[in-house]
Length: 397
Image (tube, rainbow, N blue to C red; front, side, top):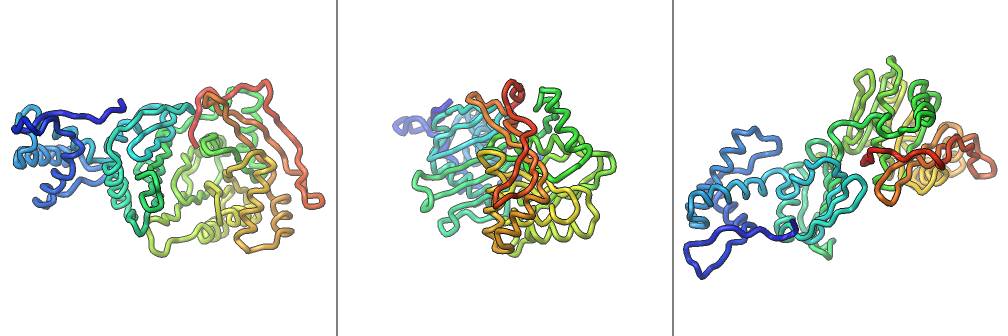
């Protein structure tokens, strides 16, 4: 891998090898002339086969590839590159892949926590066209006037892209890949005593909790696994900006997303939290990744007499509370003193996750929030990583 693919020749031998990526715009032009659209995501196999056949005909009609056998091979390759995520699709389908990155045509990925460099898989212009097409298929815009996009792909994967002028290195793409089969708590936490404590937090629902850690530490994966341990009577309401949580609970949950990339006037996290936490009698409210204004919505949910769970980026369990505090202050809804009081009274437990040099994930610490004294949170450490084992199956969050 890492080399641009060349295959086939024109009838004019002076032209030399044909770069397959250079054929794509010519084939697209021919398909547009025939009003033959690119199939949407999830198109049935018959539609994909018809599309491949149209490409093969276009290659012949334009004189791009003469030999019939070679034309079929090139046509299939071009169809693969023009459908779904193109040259990245085979990566996203590989076992253990957590993140895929593209910078100016150069591709790398993280598999089971380890960074792998793949080299230049296609020209930058190809990836720009790919990013624009993905945005269009997800009803978002990626143009010079709107040079950044964040959308959810079919299957729940998160797709982020930026193009010039905001990017100075050509097209940049980041894909956070979520496993289709959720990992169980036994796979994530092999230490039986630690796992028993976590099961108790879910099965008894004694308090609201935060799961914190650096990006990729497994926060959403652990949160998803905890939902499998909820009591059989538990009514759950899940509110996220993007559908990332893999709910495994005993009863069907209301799972709502704001779908901000699809709407001119989207439903806000605050509206969803307010309506579905006060009108539908939940036992547990899960507010997805807390990175901005949803901090206030999470704290609001935790203050309504129901349990609230969420994830947040931080360097430690104590820093998770400070980050929740800072993000809530930024909303301007409440003064600092009121926010600190609500955090101290309503967030009972913080689970902080860590990562090792080889990508292993583990529970670094668990603290219980005891209260607030002179503006500082009083914490009691319930678990501190020492001899405890790391997670044996590194998840992505």
